[in-house]
Image (tube, rainbow, N blue to C red; front, top):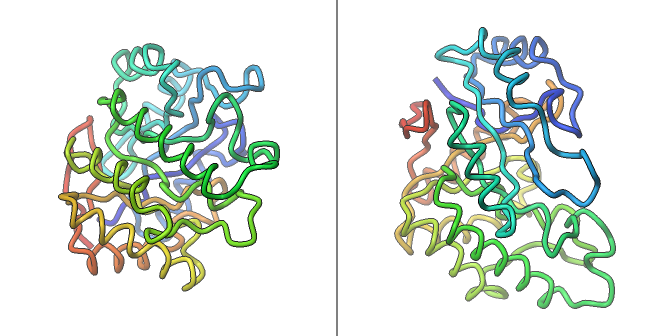
Length: 257
């Protein structure tokens, strides 16, 4: 069964999707799903992007099955390492995505993160933070959306390009590969061939540096987006000779189309 391994329901601050909506859409599409609610400790806005993990398991635990798994998306920060680790060790998640949403206590979404700074300077900081976090967050299963910054950066061309950022991107990819972790192919930006063409070299380089595993996720916040772009992501994985995997009880499993 194909799995969409990244999505957010009402337990995430920025989603109102219900479990019933997610399950209904996944059944209609014949997909397995992994719920991955946001947990960004010390987020700049108090009480945002955290959730009650006990309530999460109480509410969703009875629906856990071969086709519905329970995960989490951790916002990686070096100053939140102990708190992040405690959450992952305390609860029986199937899967843990490690993502970068906040750098120097500023959400990458915010315009202020980019003011008066060049793309090269900001992207260097972004990837350096990502590498620092990957070096110590050994308990994550997959690196989430490496291209997250390209969604929101205030530049004429916000795309990440290997030829512009080779050393910074390589530092991240080498860490993921050396630790035997997966790297996510996040499908949210794969609706345009232009974005696919820009991202393809990143995953090719991942393979060249020893990476072998990818997860695929839509990052859906509403039911209509579940499963979107999965075929494109599968094609990228196949082209780059990367194996598509999912995680159940924190153990890697191959996904067969």
